[in-house]
Amino acid sequence: MKLFRLIALFLFSVYSLSAMAQVPAQNEFTDGSLSFSVLTVTNNAAYSPRNVLAIWVKDSQGNFVVSRKVMAGVRKQHLVKWVSSSGNNSVNAITGATLQNHQLHTIAWDCRDALGNLVPDGQYEMWVEFTERNSAVGGAAGPFTKVAFSKGAEVVSIVVPDETNFKNMVLNYSPLNVGLDENLLVNLKFRAFPNPFVDRLNISFELPESSFINISVYDLTGKRVAELVDDTLPQGVNTCYWNGEIGNGNSITPGVYFLRVVYGNKLFMYKVVFGG
Image 1: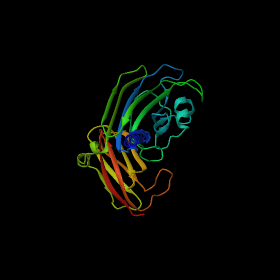
Image 2 (image 1 turned 90 degrees about the vertical axis):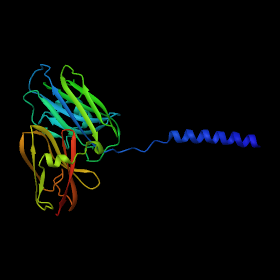
Image 3 (image 1 turned 180 degrees about the vertical axis):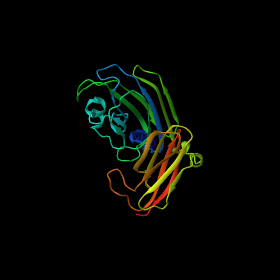
Image 4 (image 1 turned 135 degrees about the horizontal axis):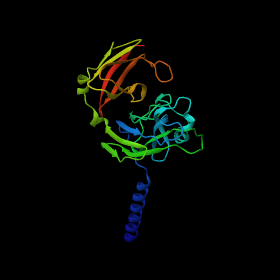
């Protein structure tokens, strides 16, 4: 009987360990910021150097996460890979007309999806596609590339070897607890006024040189509700404003919000109060 109990206990232990191994671990949701730069190079197609371009994020299963830049105007259908992935979803992306020349593109990503929600830690891919000719859904795509990276508690810095049509690719990711630098508030002479505000929040800051900067607004749950700046701006004093509206044109509810400013792979948070 004692031997039977020992065997039963052993089998139960093995079963328990096996069952525990099959229980998926809880997803971690590390907040952070990412910057990505890429220089596109012509492939001398029909309309070169004019081109349409998209930069977007996918997860490791190939699911679309969010678009960060779509420069195509009414010619988005020619971005075959992007259309197939996103379904023409350019919410929260920098958008604009067809580009007249190839150039260096820099984007930021706040680790949130198209709905503004923080995504779980894991493997992700930054995709880039451009084309200098007409195409169609299901047709041949123009040049494209992707950069895989890990979002989590560790800093990531990737310098990607040059490709024929994509050069100077650099990807930097910092979790929030590493990238946070409150000295930026002083260094950029950052101001947001009046605070509290009712109709309009005026924002001013001074860049020591022409640089990329992102300024977005988040609620107390960490959800992004608005993106105010995501661009390379000139040296000196720059301004923008927020009228309390979110992406769909509706106004937010009165309460506390945070401006998150990303500059030079560092960031800081600035609390503002909307009075409604």
